[in-house]
Image (cartoon, rainbow, N blue to C red; front, side):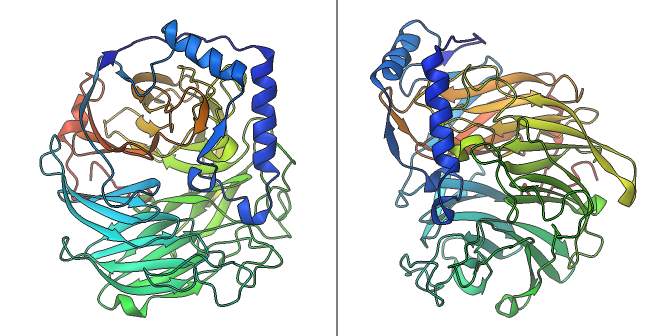
Length: 498
């Protein structure tokens, strides 16, 4: 492994900017059936031009980017281990944690790791249950799995079937994981437009699930426009087989005085809002933040069955697709991510620049239902990537340090970044880990999908390479090692210091 502390601004010729603009326009022009961002739905490999491939090889030779598959990291990051893919060879997706276990989603199902020894994780079980993206979370003895691909039925033996067919199925699956070595599939709930992601809202004997989905079409019987809200599922913990949809709150009403129906979109630049991509809830503060395609929203969840939007923002200059959200611990900031290019494009280069495909940092100003989101700055990794590497802001979590706002975040083939946004207007990177490009001649989908901090370590689910365990040793983050959790679903943010 090589340690690099470079932040070179790599030069790109005009041809690169033209190629990048063409690729992004192609992605945004896709029809509803292919418009779902995230790399499982993007081409596995797209040939690069001879000029771009030659430039990638030249940058490697000049030491501006790591070599193909070469591991590099800052001096304060240690790579403890990598566990390659096992029986599930699909796209690795999100992560959840409970006690000494990590639960790793994969487009083919999910995998459970024993992480009691972070340097030597052990596979406990692998469950074959295809259905993108298999976004994952856990609560008690229950595991929840999102299915956002139209299937022949709700079983784990289902096959792909067109969403134009009325009896096709997509939605939420529920497993009993009391026996980690033998998870049992116990229930399913169909939801309109499926479940791209989901977020848990614990409520005593019940757990509510906010289901995010989008991209309706007139010829989809169970997913027709406008699809302007989210599905709310109520799951009785002791009787999960009784889980059902109890509400579909409209978050983007057509009569909204400022943003009627949400963002109308700008072809080739900004997504039209037809649902949400991801919602992060902060139960301790009764708040939620939604990343909803063309809009960012702040919600009150005092009544979990009836979430209420209290502020809504748009950024039609630099945000193409509002992808995810993270509160700081004091709940006076939200970091929104922009998944420019849907996770399948090379956007971490000089051609795209520092403000697109980045994080947007917003302060929450005011209290209660009068709170407003106020933009402060953008953050993007300072290390440009090759034009054969998909790279854009993606999933991350807080690193719990009192008095500081520090986050670890995945950037696909841009790797894993640790950054400080205590000063909302001046965020800065303090550590990183990455691999060199999967290919110097093709755009191949790969890199870290999710990078989360849990009980002293950083866990990353790499789309192509498997499960990585990292450790950061830095005076800024060392206090976080004293914080111990018994569970972590990142989209249900804990009160770290309660």
